[in-house]
Image (cartoon, rainbow, N blue to C red; front, side, top):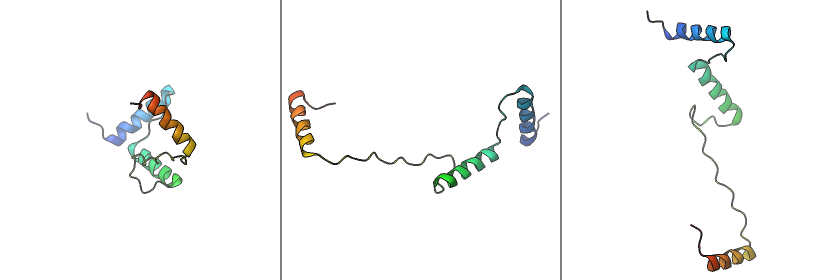
Length: 81
């Protein structure tokens, strides 16, 4: 006998509650949670379940003294691979 998806989900939910396991979340509920989080954190333009693009790390301002030290070190020890 094949149960429909909703009945199977309710059966699993009841079993989880009976044995003290975490209650499973349906796909529709999960999608709604993702949408609400994206609205809350300002990533509403991202597709559901997709990670937003990470920003590149900021580059520190170039210090001429530091750059000279780096060049001297590179000449002495070679370039890092």
